[in-house]
Length: 236
Image (tube, rainbow, N blue to C red):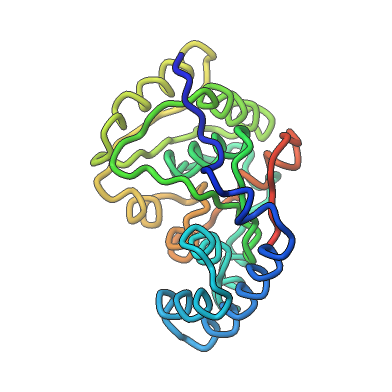
């Protein structure tokens, strides 16, 4: 096992652990709600709001992740399923999105609850996925959910262009085999499009997927409620 963590960046405590900074962020999210609901583009809106509150790059990233328009929130809510809806169903899981989010959560990185009730972190894949100390625990938590919810099958979808995607796919499949779980895993060049078009139920916190999929399940919110991990959660 390596010694890598998915934790905080240096300086995150200053950006997100101070009430004055959080107040600015929360006001910014309300401004974004106003602008996005009136069809202002996201990039221009976040730059405008970022300038207004003198936000740093990572704060703007958190702001964008937490923001949505009234129409998006309404649309996402209509398609959101409860855990009781999942029994005997096939779920398609946005592999890197969920795995990295869970790794961040259990390693004490700041995780933000957006206006749509979804949790998002500030970690990205950036072309390469690196397994961290929390990867195994994240997979175990997902397995626990799989059993409790009596899901028929879980299909993990990873981004093919990301290096090490084949390796994490094997880790997931080996774990499933060892623990007799009905899991599959696939690599896709455009996983977002694939998940939106090919799954009855998507498991993701990716905004584009939530806007374009048929139905979705908020796995991270479920795991936070069930497992109560010691986490740095910020409600926006």
